[in-house]
Amino acid sequence: MTFSQKAFADFLKLNFPLLSDFPGFTTMQSYGVFNAERKLAQRSYFIVDKNGVVRYKKVLQKGEPLLSNEALLEEVKKISQR
Amino acid sequence: MHKTSIVSVLLALLLFAFSGLAGALEVGDKAPDFELASTRDGKFRLSNLAGKKNVILQFYVLDFTPT
Image (cartoon, rainbow over all chains, first blue to last red; front, side, top):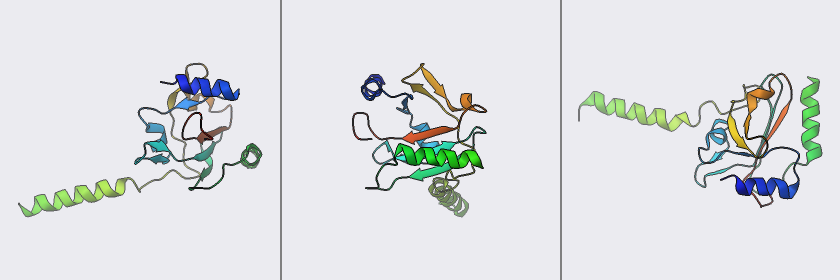
């Protein structure tokens, strides 16, 4: 089931893991980003700090562009300071 | 149908309808823990990084698409 996901990660030479929330969809649901109609995730970002607290959340609306890595890392920097 | 059974069915329907809206995850909430199959090292459990690292979770839609 995650064969294509591993192939995708290898293809992109990612230095972070891809996770599969299929077939239960439970993680998407607990984070409130499950599109039940299409059985897919809503594109979204969460930053969780070392205490396990959500410190940043962004759910992209239709047509909204992805965040750049720089923007994401900037958000991590911000939450690390507080 | 008996009056009290109509009321209890209505109540159950209302609770069901609103359960999806209540308690959406927001900044400041505890991040729900999870354990999922990972492309690296078999499984990933979020709470394993507690005390060690900040974590960026990016929910994407489909493999082999521009996410």
